Image 1 (cartoon, one colour):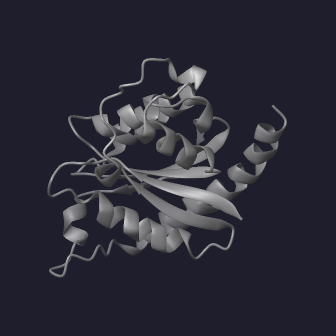
Image 2: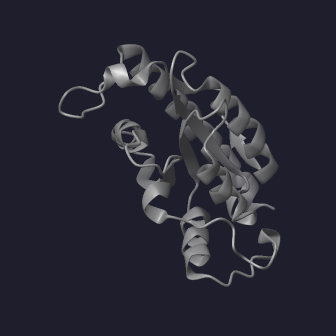
Image 3: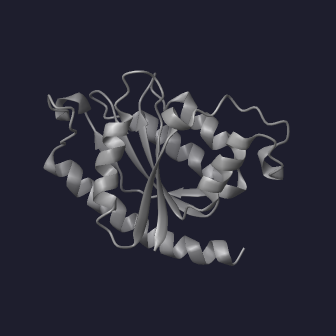
Length: 189
């Protein structure tokens, strides 16, 4: 069984990322290949990078960095759930990525983006480009949720369209495939 970490990107009050993360977790948990956990940056509350040493050295001084490192190290794959702020992914996610280096490497990632009419695709494309610098392999298949607030009912449940579920299944299928392959590469480095 592979450890899949779903990482939410937003931290501001009123954020909707946790709803989207819970939705994709429910779908991912149906796959026997994955043990699924959500890492909510709004709850983890990493300060702006405050380590004296470069992340490649892995000489962490702060407990929050050590905990973050352990969570990411044990992952075999990721799903990044990202909003789109100012045509990009949120700064807390970039900060969380930059805290570490080696822990990210040789792991596959899916991206679930949400936003207005663009469905967060600009944020997803920017994130995809940045992930490769951490040796994370983003799968081509993704979930893009346009005008996503229309899928939140009065009770606060997130209920997207059937096409979102199909996109999620396609992304998870590829994520499993890439995770298996990258596990071999990681073990032989």
